[in-house]
Amino acid sequence: MNDKKPTVTVPESALKGVVRTNLDSPNPTDAQLTRKKKSEARVHALGLPVNANLPVVEDDGAVQPRTDIEVAQRCIAVAICAVKGESDDQELTDKLVEEYSAASFFSPEEDRFRRNTHASKQDLTKFGWRYEAVHVFLWALGYAETINAPNTIADAGHDIGILKTQGKNFVANAHLRSRAEILDMSDLYYRLDWAAVELRVEGKHNDAIDGEIVVERHRALNWLIRYMNQAWDDVTTAT
Image 1 (spheres, rainbow, N blue to C red):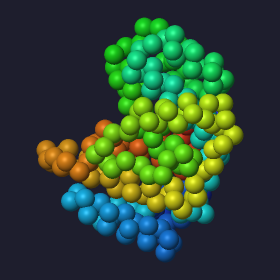
Image 2 (image 1 turned 90 degrees about the vertical axis):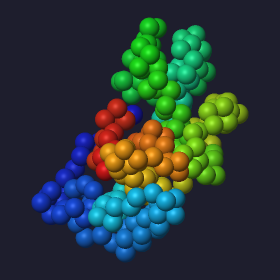
Image 3 (image 1 turned 120 degrees about the horizontal axis):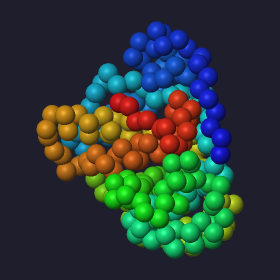
């Protein structure tokens, strides 16, 4: 899967903190502002801090989401790496790659990890957390109705069960949600991630949010909307 290189359309100097990237117009649309307002209300309802100065996310017209096939293949790759991260079972990992004909689905970093028969504990933990990205992708592809609350980890058994049930039909049966739905969720997790970071910096805790859960989901959503046109291994979650 090839990721396009960034195409600068607006000078950085014109952004003025209003929008996140120079791939979007510095003049937010009504839809962007409405989306921001709705997200802020949801974050506030959780009793979490809200940054009114945080920019809007990209406009519908500035975003070209990944295709059904791209997302489905990425979901499979991430899921296989998460299974290995949790189990450290190389035989199972290799079996899943073959079962889903997934050898070409992996990013360079994932490919090294899934082939490594002596993965470090750090890498196993890192990739084990990627069940949260699988959770997001299953929602984006219409295989799940909702995304769990930002303090509730993904049910890995349930989510992997969806892939098992679909089997080789998983890619063919995938249908991406609307651009508006994906942007709504992206905007929400952008603000939730800011709230999680703010709480951590302030040395505070709120049971309504788990920063590790949120950052993994935020990362997946940024990839979905081609944030800064970054490839999977390079996706950032700046707030």
